[in-house]
Length: 441
Image (cartoon, rainbow, N blue to C red; front, side):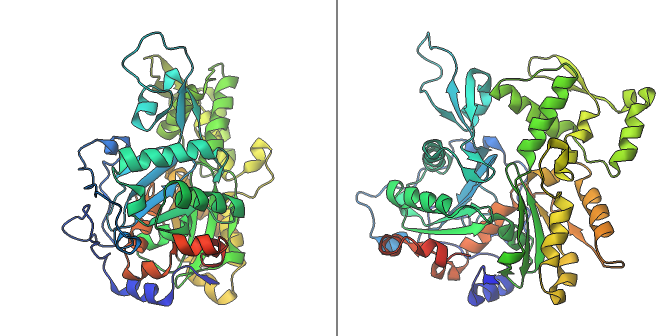
């Protein structure tokens, strides 16, 4: 396998309780422990302006000294972006990765200045905007908007200067090479970052759980992937990825609601459907039985729930609640020839050496927002048990804060003193741009 982290870093992960303090103006007084639980009150509001801007230096410091600043960890998700400084236990900023552009002609100066909106402002006034997500299925489809979002992360979210901090950027596995090439080019040339490291999202979630061996199932908004990691080595030829995740569930939910006469049609209304999905959706343990339960009208009346729309109108949400998330386990429902999430877990494990399988089955770690759907873990366990060898001991870990364990794992990794041996510095990249493929797993 490819060592995701070198032996020294693995030792350090084992020995250190947490990450060292970096010499940076953003230090906490104590370093977080690996098993610290991030506080749950981090949300889009984490972008308030009470963080002191980093002291601006009259002239940029020498490259060498910039490499000693705390690295910045950017978990670049298709649906949500999370960013903050290495060594901290929760991301400082956390907002949907979309860009809003006004749909209407401005008739008054004032309130909302500008023609592009990102972060809390884009969320708050989304009804006025056409919403564009620059990432689809983990791949950047609009680099200009991606760059705008990163710019916002630096200036508003972290209030710091990009050239002062090395960067750890996350990505899904098996992403096209050119995606990493363009990201590196923008970060090195436009943002002038001193050093860069990219890491597979699922692997970082494993560090956050305090383990170095396990099978991570990460299902976010754009991509679901199963990655076996043994003693800190990701096993690349065993990784399985499907492009079915939260955004597909939202779209299917939207279509099901349309069938029952409730039409959500603008890009902003689609965000409302996402909220309905998160509030009411669940995964059925046995979909066939669930369908039967819902078909008896008296029963289904009792299982419907009321949801209040942003305009105050109440609507009833019925069997869509479980039919939409069902596509994670059965993508054929929406005409996609992918295996379900339970199948990629088992396939990934079975692509590894026989000697490793028992340890992987005993350490399945969930990560990403789609795994937070009610009933997801139970159903996964049920399906994996059916597919695995009889009597295999299967254990699924579902960390409560798994919406940002990828970020936390990145913070732990970038906080190790050995991290600086892993990254690529700007001048190395200028000499040989391919180094970002040869040096990173």
